[in-house]
Length: 365
Ligand SMILES: Cc1ncc(COP(=O)(O)O)c(C=O)c1O
Image 1 (cartoon, rainbow, N blue to C red):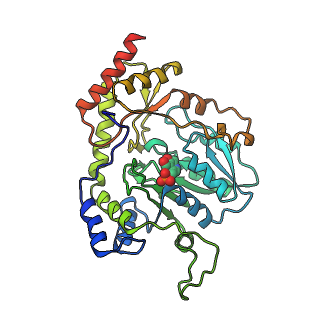
Image 2 (spheres, helix red, strand yellow):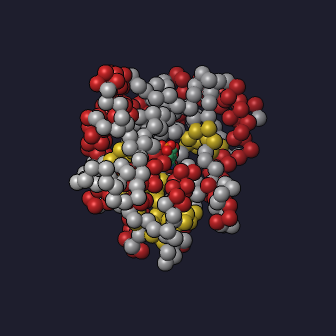
Image 3 (cartoon, rainbow, N blue to C red):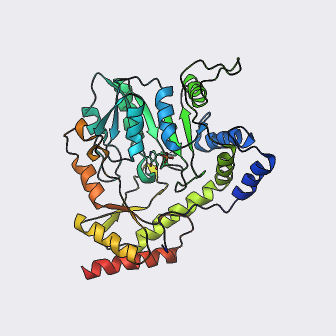
């Protein structure tokens, strides 16, 4: 592909720091980079502390367990999300209750979420989709009103802000992913942030086999090995050093697309007034759903990779039995949406080349 959907920018100290791990043989989950990355990450998002994990999926599972989610608890989650948001709810023994998304910014519909609250509801999971922020003030108010936990899945939202505050600092717990295509990457990796210091302590304890702090090889609870390696953390630290630059280039990229795609029968995801969108994936909706796949095929022919928006998770085989609700917004977004090449090295000229292929498609149909 001439233009893949994503390519990480590893042009800073990544190589030097990884080499340092190899030369000093600190390659496992002990080593100075782990704590340096955790501290720098927490400082960047404005959290008191953060704990690193192996990926963004186990990050969600760990956050749910650290928040004492119990078997049978219901967690409200938008159906328009990546499957890991839902799988981890089930893996924690809880029940996912699917809810609707808003058409404008594709984020959780708070009024719809409220309708789905029952006496068994324990939490709402806000997923900041594609780098836009969920309506956090409304979600906080809803959770206060019904005494629910607020969990933020920020896998796609490093650099995203709501009224200037970084996402991941609104809820009781929050998680991040550093997969290779994420705005900040460690190859595979994740982070957990909990508001409550005790929950944070539980997360640290549980991610490391529940090992006692005072007795060697004594494990006082059933737990996991969800640790990040020093090598991953070394990459993450180097990425963090250039995070502002990466984010600035991604915001510029969204501007190039907005400019180049003007007048065509498609719209980019809306950046809501109160938010700073980090544009993990610059994503668009075609007006007519029958145009989406032929347009993606034309782009592919021209060497331009795109991806469809996520399928609503409630339509997947393992979740179909849970609901017969129709979610018209999520269904329409999933049918019309696609992700464009979104990596920071793309230039205005690259975007013009991509936009020309899109323009040509629409002039031919
Ligand atoms: C919304 C969301 N949640 C969770 C994850 C899982 O993260 P990971 O792939 O690091 O396990 C992703 C990954 O793409 C995601 O997009």
